Image 1 (spheres, rainbow, N blue to C red):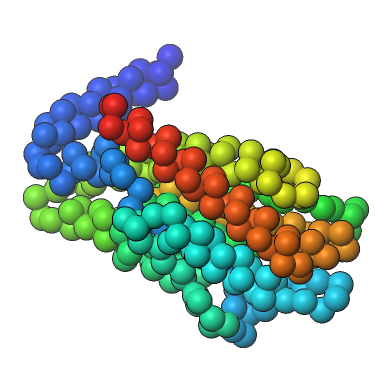
Image 2 (cartoon, rainbow, N blue to C red):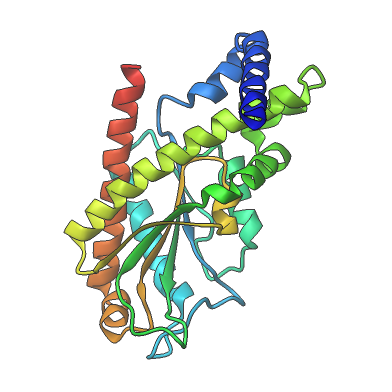
Length: 268
């Protein structure tokens, strides 16, 4: 009973604090409601340079599979939209620190972040195959709040001296929870386009604490496109057809998500 009382009291305090500054500025309102258009998309090809990623049966490096996929996604988006900026975290065999990948997305003002990877089973596991999609683990959301406050240029309004720590927490919470909602929304679309557009088996949408997702303060997903430890998956991932199928599936998911998101935003 006592715990319930404190929960109610805390909720009331939050509501009062929120009410006091909800209409303080157009910038804060913009953060809460999110952008109405998907104007900047960041595509992240995992690993690169001194970090090869996982290594397949044939000796192929993960970094050399995900880069051409990322480039194909960009080409498809650029050919479809003349009003969308598409940024690659790397467009060659360069090593980019994991924490800097999210920062690239933040600094670009991205509305969507897609990180592309390949998988490999652990030695004690049975043979695995298929694609997996990940969004940020809810248990890491408090940590994401902290990362957002420290690193996210979109939330730099929190650095103003006029904002209290409570106000910072509330605005960041609202923004981050909206991000999680749209991440799961996009991941569901992505799962559908992968199932219908590739020969890969679906292993579902999951939550994980990948730092690359933690550092990106916008709707974000990480795709494990298949298992390089499975010969069938590896052959498909190495082929131009497989890479093209995957790129088209990612592109279609972005296109569907963009249409759905902007339609809903315009009619909000």
